[in-house]
Amino acid sequence: MDKIKMTTPLVEMDGDEMTRIIWKQIKDIVILPFVDLKTEYFDLGLVNRNATDDQVTIDSANRTKELGVAVKCATITPNAQRMEEYDLKQMWKSPNGTIRAILDGTVFRSPIMVKGIDPLVSTWKKPITIARHAYGDVYRDSEMKIDGAAKVELLVTYPDGSTKKQEIFNFKDSGVVLGMHNTDKSISAFARSCFTYALDTKQSLWFATKDTISKTYDHRFKDIFAEIFENEFKDKFEAAGIEYFYTLIDDAVARIMKCEGGILWACKNYDGDVMSDMLASANGSLAMMTSVLVSPDGKYEYEAAHGTVTRHYYKYLKGEATSTNPMATLFAWTGALRKRAQLDGLADLEAFADKLEKVSIETIEEGTITGDLKNLIDIPVKNVVNTEDFLKAVASKL
Ligand code: NAP
Ligand code: MG
Image (tube, rainbow, N blue to C red; front, side):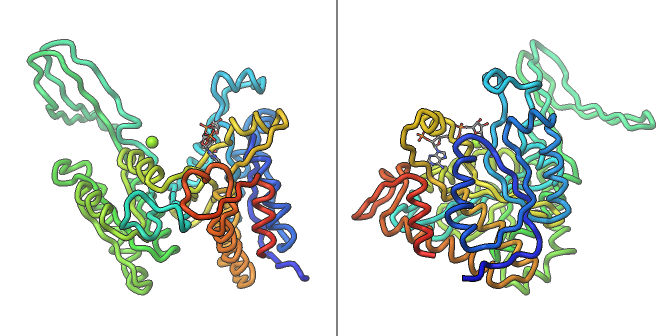
């Protein structure tokens, strides 16, 4: 059999622990036998990040800007314990944070839905994708305790020395105060990533803020989205048969509970933090959540939403059998291959990505599953297997 050809390489970002093991198994078992895989390999495993003073992370992100599509394995974000475990020179920053800063992108998360694992919200028939704005607001705020009677004001100083002042509150007694910000640049990049991804996936886009209460701050988000939609995306949305829908955040939440899914929901930073955890838990398993970073100029980095599954890795090192779910990492690969295929006009590669997703879902629906799904899935026959055997079952269907 001739292998499926690629023209442009993917940026391949390898990672850590259990997901690093799964990474190789996925390539060996379900991709390499069928695809003449082309990648530019960057080892983002913590050992190599430490050896290169994290330059490898920066290089991989810059290469993604040039080539357009990356696939990333989960990576360790170092903490004090990891400093010791890996004898690190420095507590290197989160690779995802570094890559996101370079690509200026937005993260989109959606569940892989299979029959037998029904969302807790019975009306959801199709996946709901959440996009979280990852800059500013309460995550970059400045807070203060007020100890007694005090007048608190906002003070703005312009480069020419002129100032603007506005009262926040005249305290009669103790309390708290906070100041937060966002930038037009960051909000615009967020909006463009969302409109681009909606078009890409042919899903309508919902966006919500509390602009009736926050008449300047939240209203700015609403205005920037409306302006960019009107000037750059309206015609494309019409042609694609999708819509942009703006509403208030409380109304959006109420409607989400009654919708059938298949939409893209753009959330401000805090709303996205809260709602993405709600969505993940309503869909059952972190191991079935996919994630893609999309830059405002249409560069893509696909990954799983979960981490390196450390607990399973320590068992694996002791020689114990593990049954880690490879689905989200597998879908990172299919997402990247499909996007590469679309950009390069490779119909057979796109068909392969679709087929690989389809047969891996079928494998689960027919009862061959990893341990994490055992108590989640409602099907008559359950054959719990390890990661490798799960992938072999998928490959046999290809
Ligand atoms: P995690 O790796 O997502 O795992 C948390 C738990 O969720 C696991 O112990 C396991 O539960 C379950 N789980 C997650 N993925 C699974 C899968 N594919 N199959 C089966 N079960 C799965 O989170 P963590 O343990 O908090 O973090 C581990 C490391 O990952 C940390 O060093 C962190 O920095 C890193 N991390 C990286 C990323 C990223 O690169 N994007 C994201 C998050 C965390 P049971 O133990 O109950 O089986
Ligand atoms: Mg959260």
